[in-house]
Length: 407
Image (tube, rainbow, N blue to C red; front, side, top):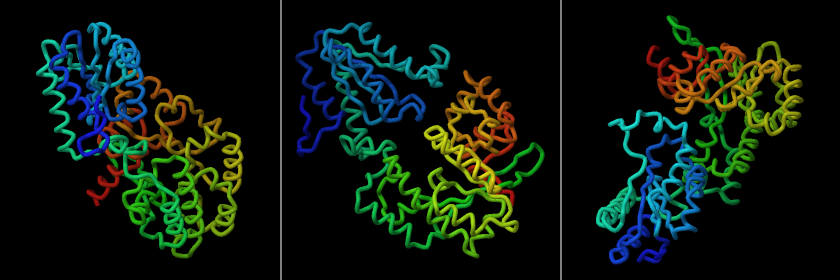
């Protein structure tokens, strides 16, 4: 199989599929193909690691039937096998369906006119022309979309956005964090209480520095989230800068009725002790510290130590960035925290109107409706499902826009 394009670069899967399909004109007998429409699944089921696992599920076909597997630009998979019956390939397709069984795509009534098929089948002996058309069409679509080939087409990093950061760019970012005037990078976003019949009421203002905005300013085109450990390092440097700035007279008024988004390592650092000594006064009032849920799960002993210290110093504690699937596992009273932030996503809506509705409702009741904040809400469905669960606290762009429109 030709793995190089005419210009010498590595060929894309679409180009290789076209090349292979065209060469089958005289070798059609006993060959069969299927296009698996993973592109029909919700975006949260099309992440790189899920696509890799889906391809791996089809590995037995590669060994048994000399199958070739192509991942198209839209995440569909095309499998081309020799000497395989449709039932043989269907076994792999069923395993892929099991992986994504909870996707709303599979909840539609069988035969629904609104739901396209999950697979298109081709008997190459009789459908060769149609199969070649399919390959050529996807190759043309990829070219029109101006997508790169190889790993760059998948984005290099896990989220597929921009180039990964090397030592020179890292140093540039660190210097920018230490030396720049970060006023333009400071973000404020309010948490609102929403009660039927009343206007949204702000109850808390989260203060944070926008790492992506800073990176875009200092190193445009580079992906600061592609490497988890690198991102955590930069966030730690940015946290220290925030703690150094906040005691300044022009920043201190912001700390009233506010929360700071910090890592566990930052709270346990000398910089936080300096910040606490400089700002912890009756005039400031209570301040909430938002700690990532990941820090709790990766280091519970350190988390409990930091929690006790913060409570002794009068801080409130918010467990931040909680994935909704973990909510039934949390015991807020045992954790001895004040609030829990769960992250809105389309998947949350799908599960809360479906299979996980009862579990989520019970989890919210156990934690306390008034103790759960649904954050990053940027769609009406976020507000809808939150209110259905009995939540009253929300944060996100949708709420910002609602309040701005009413002001």
